Image (cartoon, rainbow, N blue to C red; front, side):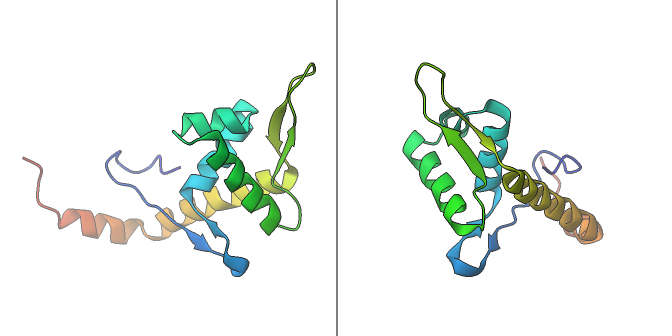
Length: 121
């Protein structure tokens, strides 16, 4: 997300969208985890989140957008799984692009603020 920053410096951006949906780093990381693992449960575990909480966040996002962000299939003989829909990938890509643009636009201000910090002992 913020690869250009030192590891101890982070930017966390949360969008408060119409209808009460909040989209921030947690949901973006969950979407990314689903895309990488093919599983809502595995993505949630990777974040230290319960299966129930991960599912709840996915349901919240799916209900808020005009099309679901995550498609899932129940387990069984063929196995289950989940993946991002085209809309889900678009939301994730645009959120990450917004973070990158914010970091780029604020680079001078971030540098000026960090220059005022006391040196670490």
